[in-house]
Image 1 (cartoon, rainbow, N blue to C red):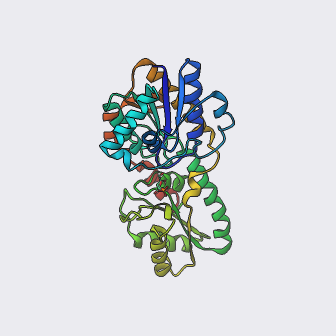
Image 2: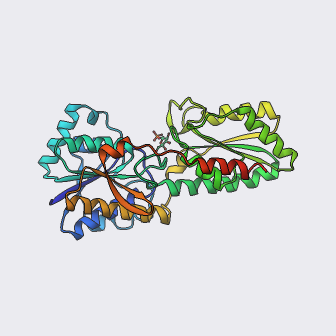
Length: 334
Ligand code: F6P
């Protein structure tokens, strides 16, 4: 092992930069050369590489996003595209690839490893839906961003005695909604994994008002209610929150407002937790490559950083925490 490449792929997540820094500097510490791949797998296919030196990852710990940029590559999904990527890898004398992203990224890395390139995956997605780790890089920061918004919305919700429907990210998963709904005291949390009864949601709001509650907060994941949004991030269409907001306003007769937090959740300075996670994961990935324990995904389990083979990791699903769901329902509706 002499020269490794690092890339970020899929939706960006706060903490990707500290992770790149850890991969680069831990590699340099061990005498390895590092190549940064721009725009994820797309850059691998086109050979969009840059030599990474220590100073190039200076002053990025606190920056959200990814200095390597991220993109979706349709070409890499084809055999020809992967053959081109392999040629770039061989031409540039890259011995291994570290990929930072979610399950989609790991699928790509797994395909590469089947072509004889040692690879290691590092979970980074605000959705926290990677089955092989309890925490993915970016989730904590995104939840803190959502909580900050909930706190602010509460102020105005109380002043005007309104119901607020807040849509958070999570096209296929309710982890952000659940964590922030519990921590933010939402009256109802609607997520893709659990069917909801809109009548029950409305009854709760009306009961709360009778009990003297000054406002109600309903947290909705993008993909709640079955139909996942066609365009993502709530950018070009009225998603779950609009549908649910209208139903609530019509049924309760209460003044109701809708907030779609969207891509704000993906930006911002990574939290302490995400920086530490990113740093530990990045360093572990390099250790795995040096030990010849590649073709694996790094993850956090019971506060320990561990590695799981791609096959196993890709078959794992991260279930939502039903304790959170049940407790939130009890504590916010008394
Ligand atoms: O990163 C995952 C995610 O946050 C999903 O929850 C969301 O639906 C999606 O990204 C939106 O991504 P984009 O708008 O960049 O395609």
